[in-house]
Image (cartoon, rainbow, N blue to C red; front, side, top):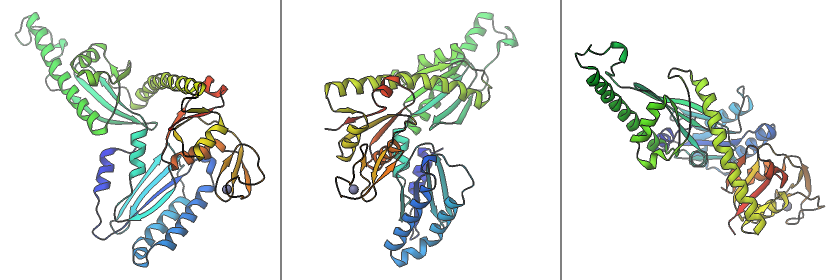
Length: 371
Ligand SMILES: [Zn+2]
């Protein structure tokens, strides 16, 4: 899983005369076969365009990349990113659940901008599991969960030790426990806040004991407690897969509400003709005129159409020649994927809607426009 701290470290890896090769490749299952061709074309270009002196330094890296992709034994997700420098014995690979713009770049520094964009555009969730004496923190991002850390506050006395054990009266013993629980929750809040800041997380999901969650909420600054989007019940020592299962249910509830709101905004705006379009034809026009701000489409939505062999112009309607360059058109059965890929290439925001009947009925795809 990508993380901002690690990217920062990679970004800091400086030259001292050595070179890095950064590869970004769309490896979606529906572009199977194609991505090997794309890679080979990109390699051909970079070999032709690069200065001989630099080429000497990066040739080994490029061969390694090609061998890695073509002989791949691991199942790819949607996007693949690899940053390598043989000179520095550096190799880092990322399997991304989202598409990336194809690129291969040789430079004195690693090219990490696309990874940063992914971190900025896809929602991350902090998951806090907490009770009176312990806490666990997780990061959920791009369909994966990672345990981030634990908090065990020392010396939280348990009630099972019985009143009087500390020679305290029952009442004072209660206060003693409260005091330790507060210390613990203070620790938890501190750790949660630094976690949120380090990873720039905007959403929190809480789980564990209701008392502890309520205390955490109480002690968090308002701006932070407002980031809590949902909660779930779980044992403190549940295994990470069981926790993820529960978290996923919360997330899909939250995101489906948000998706409903986005689709409703989109349909309203398009209906009033206010900087929004609906349906593949209008979307393609806006996309190719560079007017789109955010592309919105139903996940795995399929549509067929035509693509210019020459300039890659996309069309829903069958036309005998490309209206832009008079090139020949070929039939394509993944028009939506191609449109989404163009959007990523243009650096546009994209929003994939998991499931929404209104949008499906309206043509499955739409966009908010810049003008
Ligand atoms: Zn064309």
